[in-house]
Each structure stands twice: as C-alpha cells, then as structure tokens.
Length: 232
Image (cartoon, rainbow, N blue to C red; front, side):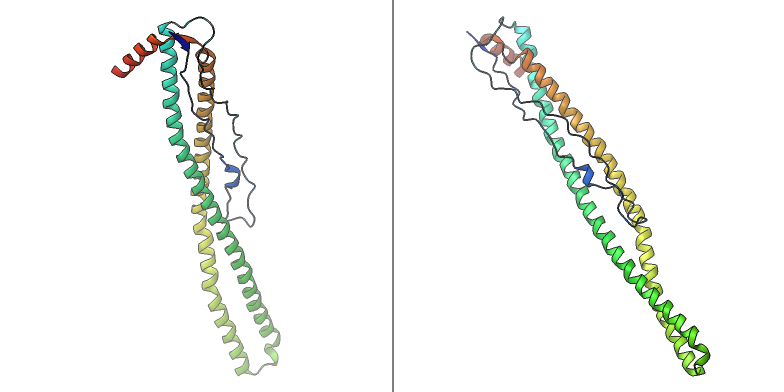
C-alpha cells in the first residue's frame, strides 16, 4: 500500500517580541535627560507552518532511503523546535527582567530629579540668607550679627549631609547603569542569535515540505524505518 507522506513538522513558528528599543541604555547617573533608545532588532519574517498531510501523494514513489532521509530530517526539526521553545522562555524571561530594571531606573531618575530640585531650592535659600546677613551686617548689633551667623552655619551644616547623600547616590548609580547596559547588549546578541536560529529552522521546514511533504511512499518502508529508529 502507498499513501502520501504524512510526516509532518507541526512546530509553530517561534517568535518573540524582543522590545529592546524599550530597554534604554541610559547613563542615568550623569545625564539630566534620558539617552535615545537603541533601535530594536528587526524581527525576521516567519515561515508558514507545514500543512497536514493527506492520503494520496504526487510524483514518483519514494525509495526507502529517501523516506528515511525525510523522517530523519523531520525528527531533527522537531528536536530543534523543542530546543528553541526552551530558549524562547529564557529570552523572554531576560527581556522581562530588563524591562523591570528599566522601570526601576526610570523611577530612580525621577526621584533624583525631584531631590535635585528640592536641594537647589534649599541651597538657594541658604545663599540668599547669607547674602542678606552680609548686606545688613554693618547695621546689626554684635549679638544680632552673631546669632544670624550661627543660624546660617546651622542651616548650612544641616544641608551638607543631604548634598553628600545625593552625590553618593548619583555616583553609586554609575556602576548599576554600566551593569544594566552590559545586560542589554548581551540580551540583544542572544535575541539576534535566537531569531537567526528560528529563521534557519524555517528554511529547513520549507526544504522538508518541498522534498518530502507531498510525496508518496510505501507504508512498509515507513514501518521498517521506525523499527530501525527505535533500536537506536
């Protein structure tokens, strides 16, 4: 008996939305505004899935060797598809973690900008108070001048720890941002490699459909080949 080759590679094309453009490699610790986004890798076009086989193939009946080659390549495609499916989960996990890190960086930058504005207001107020003392010093009694100077020094002393803490947070963030940028670059490479592997699998699936997808074969050959494969 003969029938159309019902070997199939029913792997759904693996795609992942690698929104690297949203993962900005910003120097948040030294910049007042966010850097431009890196362009996202352009997703490759997905090949259509192989159509299910139906009875009654076309063309010359395949030899056993030809059928064996088709069955082997189909197994290899399925194994590659399973590996890519696992890899996809890893790629998406890293993408989501980078998105969360980016959101945290955005919040940090927003908080730092608010702190910067507040500190500037306090610094300007202390400076204005100092200028006021200097301008009116000649008209003040010695005791009044001393009290004003002490008040100025107390306000300045209270402000300095806030300035130091702000600068430390900015400086510490430099290393965090470097690590983030490194992760983004590494993720982009992994994403590119993943997409390339998907395209390679698509090509092999299309090749399989062209060579094997609509060919007739002897069912006895299929049974014999499956027995061979099961022994390995």
